[in-house]
Image (cartoon, rainbow, N blue to C red; front, side, top):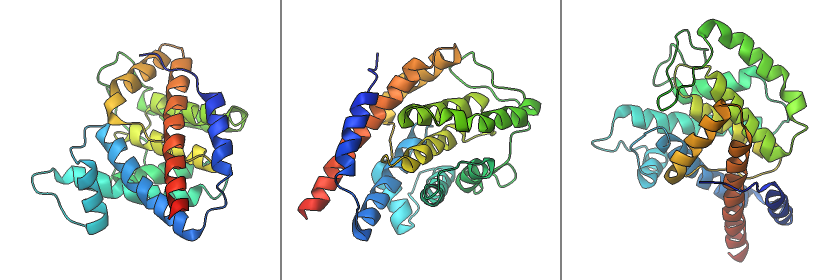
Length: 250
């Protein structure tokens, strides 16, 4: 499926969003908790986590274990929620550091494997469904150093394009033994929050399109992925405006 470039639409909706600001403390809290559930559920579901959105809400808000569901799925939900809190703290400043990326992964992953959480992988990995081969483990630190060194120049891009490129470049390096996609989506949302955009969700129903756009980028064409992310941001902006207007009416 082809996705249009929505950067101009992103700009238009962002103007409308700015018109609702500043938000009061109640509105900020309501929106944060709404997106905690939404981003945790969708990002985990994209990777095969079996918890539904309502089950994710129960796990995070009530601390209840869902019968018949793998313990790992619960750990992924709780860990992602902790990383989400860090995301909001990091969004209060404009820089993104190596320590930030490692901390996002560590919080998400330490319940699953404390030995590898927040650490670059020491093994080769195979990405299923593609013939792309990520860098060898020995090349990961230098690839990450190059990526981080390029961040200042990437910031000259449109904020949505910048966030898409952060996502894309991190998953291309695939620096962790597991949790790369979720860390990349957290990083993408960190860049968006720092630029004043709302949390952006990639719905599991369009997972095939998401993977296809990533695969095209692996072959040297980044534009389909940038277009794809711009559409996801556009849909998320519309949802954010709906929520803001609902809060205004109350």
